[in-house]
Image (tube, rainbow over all chains, first blue to last red; front, side, top):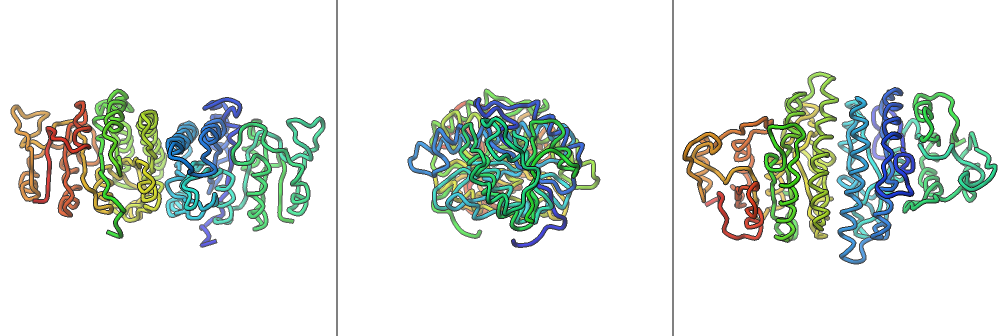
Length: 269
Length: 269
């Protein structure tokens, strides 16, 4: 960690499966985007950073051209350009809604200020992000197609960005808005009577990791198992992570303001 | 100048008055955007960097909230967010057209990687831009609302970005796509028989600077006089600048491939 920002930020991840229909293609759920913008506006959290996923914008395009595994042939270059472009389109819809809900939100384009190495963030010029937070803006980032020093390019997941920012800015809390109620002892989309964990410690989380469901739709960045793997270093650093269902009204609002909410809270101890 | 890139890039500025109706509000000229994308695709220039202006997207919003003169009251914060957002919307339309014309174009968000000081670029993290050029991508930047170390925020003109990049990367040539045929001895939008300069040296340019017309519509970044002031340091460095009418078909194409074209070529000597 280079240095701490002045106040600890709250980082909100909005899953691509919430704001898009992951089984469609370029299928935004504008009503969900607008509802979440309302909840964020109502919660009025200081030092908020928002990161959203790619859903049916980034993932199918990235998959079609094999972007995650890097540059192997020249024809992929248009695929890289297209993947980044469709992500800016989804981000534009999110920004539209945030701005018209009077949230001083500024998009910060990951591929303009981050470079990865073998898929991991190697370089992140965070001068802009720091100033934005200090001035009271809400920076908004997203999973993006980024340049990679070893592979040419790759896909940088919103989850990796969340974990990176949480650790770098020593976040007060991470709110993971997903399309299920939290972490279960079996995949809630297929199991009959899965049990929701209301609270997990880091050691409990590590024990049950293997039983967590993989993402069912096309997700090039790993679904729930991938999220947990990304977040463990942040939890180890003492940052609490709360999984809540962002597809259900008021859950994100409650989590942001610190109310008790159905979901899974993960703490170091 | 920190260091030179491997090959000298060509920098193409597309004026906001060409791709938008400057007398409207958020009024894109998609047919002009598509025609220019075709010309750029046909010209197939190596090491191309594109920068576009704000036209009726950035300028009216920036003017409404007084963004250029910096942060003076809290209510401007939403205006800053809105100005950046509308610029990303215009950029999205440009990128849409470039990508669907099979140009490996990647938007690089100025406000995500540049910070100004009293309106001048103070800090520009250009790692991403350098890698993009090396890999054969076409980076696309634009006039943007940016953070400013002294003023809080301001408007960074596409023209300043053009001049900055031209000098930093020692550009082979700058093509300025505007909505007039070039530089005249009087404002072509009001004068009866203005004379077009086909060629100007730097010393000739400095002599006639005072007679160049100001932008007639809302332009917070100075119109033609502002463009010349920004470009003089690049011309002094030996970089030729050609003004051509991007609103007329094939002028940009001809200038990009080095054909003789109606316009004004400015050279150091």
